[in-house]
Amino acid sequence: MPLARIDLAEGKAADYRRTIGEVVYDAVVEVLKASKDDRFQVITEHPAHECIFDPSYLGIQRSRDYVFIQVTLNAGRTMDQKRAFYKAIADGLHECLSLRREAVFISLVEVSKEDWSFGNGEAQYAK
Amino acid sequence: MPLARIDLAEGKAADYRRTIGEVVYDAVVEVLKASKDDRFQVITEHPAHECIFDPSYLGIQRSRDYVFIQVTLNAGRTMDQKRAFYKAIADGLHECLSLRREAVFISLVEVSKEDWSFGNGEAQYAK
Amino acid sequence: MPLARIDLAEGKAADYRRTIGEVVYDAVVEVLKASKDDRFQVITEHPAHECIFDPSYLGIQRSRDYVFIQVTLNAGRTMDQKRAFYKAIADGLHECLSLRREAVFISLVEVSKEDWSFGNGEAQYAK
Image (cartoon, rainbow over all chains, first blue to last red):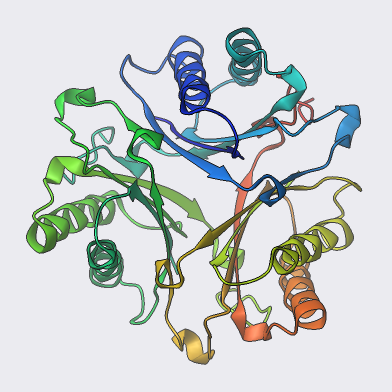
């Protein structure tokens, strides 16, 4: 059910961006326990100076590779699941793209089951 | 009051995208009972491979025309209103653009009346 | 902690957009009392006709300079803080860019402290 918005600076290959999407999807299924094939993602490239981040907030050293990931998802995940989700994404991006774990921003927005339509104008998750 | 973000693959005419905006606006006014002229929308085109969706999740056959619509709106709509909203958009896009009803993704994000400023730095909806 | 998405019509200099980001950041720190250096912003330019707004909803005269600002932030701000936040942004943009105060749209989306990771795959704000 999640919708993931992925924003990053331009200059990477299309494959690089697709891999980010795959890593996020894998974490959605494996950690958040979404169903297989539950993948909806919008990726946007920006001029580098329009993806703005502080380079050292909270003592974390960020670099130009910084990636913004904002995920809209159903409420109900535990704190442990959220922690595991953040870690899975940072680890996955590090493994697949050698992206530094410092370079991953994640923001969650919780909504209700009735707040989704995946096609046909129906509310597939609503009771 | 809603803010609608509309994301879709590039390759359509500007008129096509404008019509999507009009259909969403009509549903906002007619179904959600927003005031006339309450229209605030941001449309973004993306390379097709950066609008990512599973082609058959939940048994719905999606195609490259798939449109992502995410609407931030005030909390308080009933489940019936949300269902009617999804249906109105899917029906409207089908009628106006011959878009298949399967090709419409809608995500709602509920907020409070005090979470909006429409200009002048004031919170127009807050009591 | 806020993530600010700033969307506006193309045609302005990069400096203009950067200044919008600075004004939003200043209001985040001074009014919302976020920590210094808590700055995370994504700016997107659009063709003018894809930033859609009603020119007179609620009696406010909007112009092509209209700027959309959507801020995801932790819940807990008072109504007074939100009002002051809207005013600080509209005043700041007016002072720094001569942007009319009518031309500023702001939408807030409240989330929880555990809904953020600023790097390292950790939930820095969670207890």
